[in-house]
Length: 389
Image 1: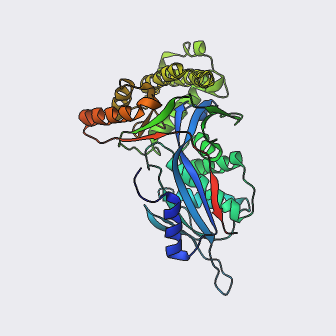
Image 2: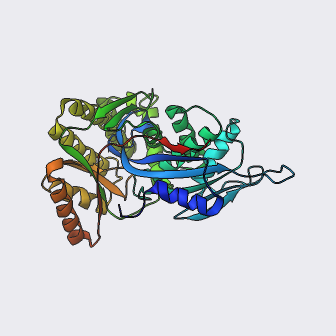
């Protein structure tokens, strides 16, 4: 992103400045979802990949005083400052950035894991609020550090479940499991086809000669609001009318029988059903090395998100249209929860730099904003960078 030091160096330097050498340094990547949007909380299929931007946590145990009393846990972020938590008395402020960190600690503490107070420093290269899962990267990196100092083994699925609970129960965001699961489990060089019911994960190699372009519109919208919850509720109502446990089990012809007063639910269900079909087809296209087919499916996904799920927005539509019409692009779509943030494009590697210049110039001319554009290959999931224990 810039010429500054990597996030790991910055997190360790921040920790040393406050408390000395950390006991453990852990990282987790951001993610971009190639296709399969708003399907995870409908027990469907998603096809995300980790990106080459990390969130890093440097952590050490806090010292007790001579009487052996507990001390508070403290987190300091290069972007957001410092926050503390008394594990015995404090309630977590769901509106504060530290809720993602303290939520992980409290849920692990509730399971008898990582009960010691701690101090940690956080640095990140994941663009914040850009629909690239900066919150899940923070949660997973924090979980990795706390599990290590507690002597617990790493389990990507179990960790992802904890992090999803932080979002659902602590922060109040009714999201699915996709984000923390890909941040925890990604395989370098591969996207992952995830069955969000069984949580089976099948790595899929990116089509040869292709690179993923992440296109930041530089617009932002908080997802902890009624728009996301309304869509999840509409999906639940549609599944209830269709007498299915989840929209993953619904058939496209069945939704056409839904009554007129459920027309919104019908559109939401149509997106989920067709998006699941597109996601499975996209995995097959990757297996076949068919960039054109994959790109066409991404284009169709954006149209469905725009028209049936209604989670796109003017900046996202402009960015996607510009990308789709630029040389070297096989397909593009909005990515993440929607309304603002990032789009994703499948681009020919040989023409990627020209694509980047063209999109940046056209987007600036159309919107007056300087887009953030990054090229990424699929990165690895969470890991320890180093441990001194």
